[in-house]
Length: 255
Image (tube, rainbow, N blue to C red; front, side, top):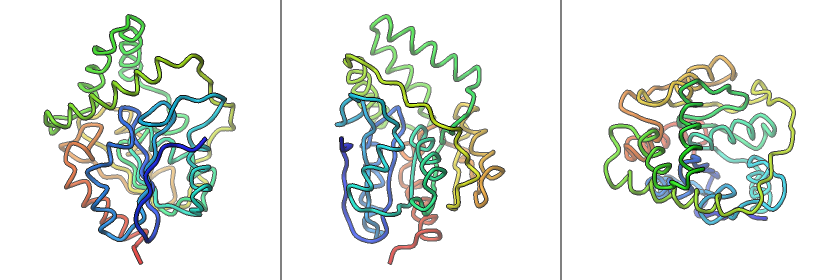
């Protein structure tokens, strides 16, 4: 199965991986700017998000994305990823280091991370709402949890639509397939330079992951945005787009 995706432009390939609160549409504010900067830009929907259906077999998102790159004959990408997409991106960069030239991570998750009590509490509240068929309540919980104070009503509505669609697709699935067992991901195998961004108003898990990555990776630096929640590319899109293009120009310059 091929993941639903968009692929435009020329130059070095930049792959955009979305948060599990959103789908590939979260990158609309960055899309044209990255194309104008001289990149081939690719974005995809993970299974159960956007236009990609749920799985009909065991799978991992990292292998799905690798297979998509193979199908498009893309040997290497600069990877820009948000939240859960960042966790997938770290797995890709560790398992196939030659496929990832650089990593820009926005409030990323991390393989092997043990969730805090606050994150577990969020998950428990979400589960209770979904088990009670209160999809609207679960959507609002996500919007309130993951967007910082800079997010306006338009952004909140955009996230609301993406999250509701994901819930509807996932809840309609007849069967779920757990991810196959894999060896522990060794982040020390990552060779790509990394920018790890966190947001001051995010949950502590993601702030701690971003601060820790420079200790785990050979070439990583941490930047905390004092105004940001969990989805800074939507909260202040122009500022984050400029930050991403500057980092890409340093580590994966256009031809």
